[in-house]
Figure 1 (cartoon, rainbow, N blue to C red):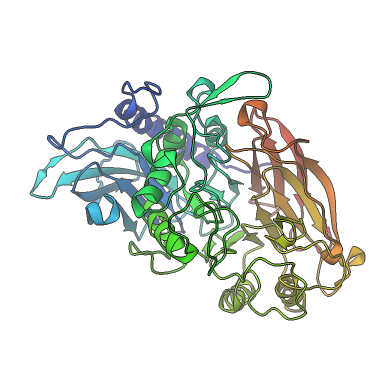
Figure 2: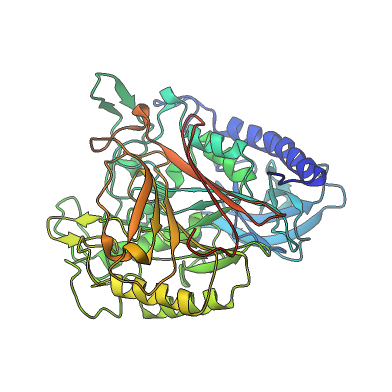
Length: 531
């Protein structure tokens, strides 16, 4: 498929060169001897000299004319961003950012506005001494492409689940190698479908694998226990940035990030009171508020402020071909239950988010409308012996419980003649493709659609769960292990790739695994119902 013009390919090559220079500097800053490994921990520098951006840079929620740049300092500093159309930074534009201090764990973001659409933007972040702006640390470089204003090809990748089930950064395997594989595809952005951390998953220094080998983890103080304090949640988010592959990826690929359960703890819901003996703080609402604040500090999200006020759900418009609707299936849900209620207005999204989603889908003029859902629709995900964690509850009949809200949404999509909806998710720690069709379903008032599952990025892999027949899913592809919590050393680490052709509008989904293999490919035609 012809996707890129010569000019666009040229911009991509320039971007790669710029990031190689910036990521090399960032990697060098972190390569100091530690008990775990020489390459995987940040230096404990004295608070003398100049501010340092040891944790790299990120850009989030990029539009046709804007982006949100993130950095973390090692001490109080003024954030300054410079942007340029070229890697030489001739005629650079300067953006004065916030003062970074202990109140935000020395993190901060600077919004960039008025950028040209469909263009490679080079940027560098400088950290200045608050008392002497002339004293700045070494700049950290990054690059990203703004969304196109005209019809132009789009490529992005998605996945979820990082450092879960006791499998963290393993220096023997080279760390989070999957991010390097995704980076080489040079996507326009990365959609992270949740479980960016495992706040409830402490890491041991070593784990014996079933075949007798030893898995080694890079460990930190904050990853030695379940996260309860704000400092511990911050340390969980900071842990992943020890990985050089992830920092290099962040310097080249913008993110659209959402959260799920493990940012707080497994299968949580608002109002839950814990019985888990590992926790001294039993109120999940308290834990969620602390995690949400750390989450807002460590990711550049346009709808969240540094005090964690705002919301995770939002829509990102990526030119005429693509809108991405980012959902939050965690914050507004009702309690996990057997899911057999005949009435359920709150459901998994909450009434306000559902109304927002219906409104935004109706207003969208994009050819493709990707619904980024942190939970699958027709996969039966249990929570204990009798309750259910996602939407489906195993009853193949008419919608009940949380299915009622999804049925309302699917009915709305059909009756408003909204075309081009594709659902992407992670959560279940394997990869699969589901096609939903009313001809196979108990509930029939909807148009056929596809849902694709990917992940984990670096976490335990699990066997496939059952399908629920309410919305008529058929599963033409699944790859999953036959036993629970298979380590990344044994494979089963996955991500998905989406390519939208700029000329035909054709959308191609590829389900990939670590190592480069394409496991499954599905090509969807624009405007066609029932494919």
